Length: 105
Image 1 (tube, rainbow, N blue to C red):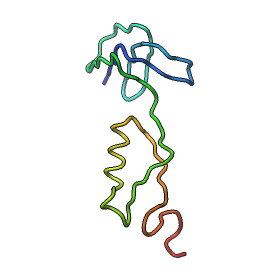
Image 2: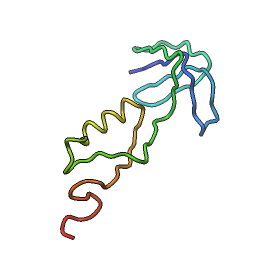
Image 3: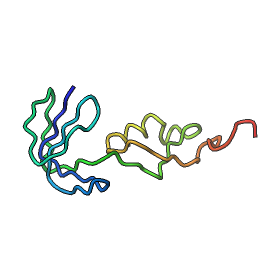
């Protein structure tokens, strides 16, 4: 499946891109980034006024599960992260029990 993202402000520090461009994605992989892509796709998105960038990593999250599910669960925290453009998170070990060691310690 092909997805074409049109007119987004592409920010990609690795490839030194910071401009309004189009992005063609095929089978879940970026195939082309260019000022104007005319290729057709099954899905087209207009990203005018939006930022298009590689997935972000949040280095400080509180998922709170186990022990404090009334504050947040792994599911709700990861859903919120994904909605915000985060593809990776680094959760704090502020759970009960603490999730940073073996259970037999």
